[in-house]
Amino acid sequence: MRIDVVSIFPEYLAPLDLSLIGRAREEGILNLNVTNLRDFTTDRHHKVDDTPYGGGAGMVMMPEPWGQALDSVRTSAPEAAKPILIVPSPAGAVFDQQMAYDFAEEDHLVFACGRYEGIDERVIDYARENFTVIPVSIGDYVLNGGEVAVMVMIEAIARLIPGVIGNPESLVEESHSDVLLEYPVYTKPAAWRGREVPEVLLGGNHQRVARFRRDEQIRRTATRRPDLIKLLDAAKLNRKDRDA
Ligand code: 6GU
Image (cartoon, rainbow, N blue to C red):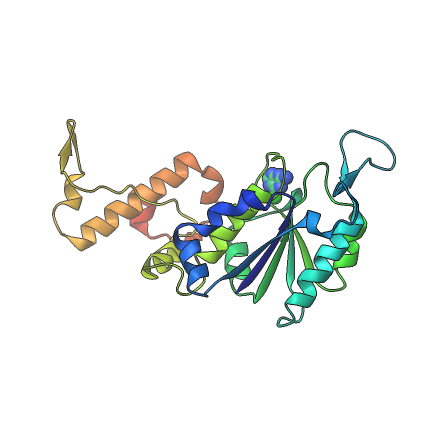
């Protein structure tokens, strides 16, 4: 997969050199390029923003540097017919695991990081000629710019690409338990500061362990995320699940 990120703060994305994503890049599984929007300015001060038409607080990102940057990304990567252009914005559709699965199947993703009050809307219109444009938010709160949101999305997407994660079985387990929160986990020692590991986990009875874990998942989901319980398919709940 190829991923392009356009930003006025390319250094913000430096952590993508690390850990599993960094290794995937070294191994050529992930071709990730970060482009500095200011490279596409022509004035002495590398200006990328200006005051909003109609007035109001803050600044708006100017169309011309964005037009040049998106044209450059498009022509440097002719392989995919129409790359996805993800525009991080608190006004976008909320990113979730299903979006991560869908984006992980694409050949080419481009992230356009806005700062200030946003990007001139004509850039978004123009981009639809060459990209499938999708405004995406990572949740209902406000960040200063798209860079941190893009890191969140890239991590969620990249770990689903075959070969990025060491143990692909963990992905299978995750996908089966998508709507339920994860069960609590324990490791050695069996007793620590007066606290014991639940006895059922020490016994080696796989059926009892599975029952314990599923009960904990249901209990956690009901107390921490009652909104998710609605999504649970009633048909997939068995009698023992209901008792939990
Ligand atoms: Cl994607 N961008 C910004 N600037 N703020 C956000 C966001 C994105 N998602 C939640 N808040």
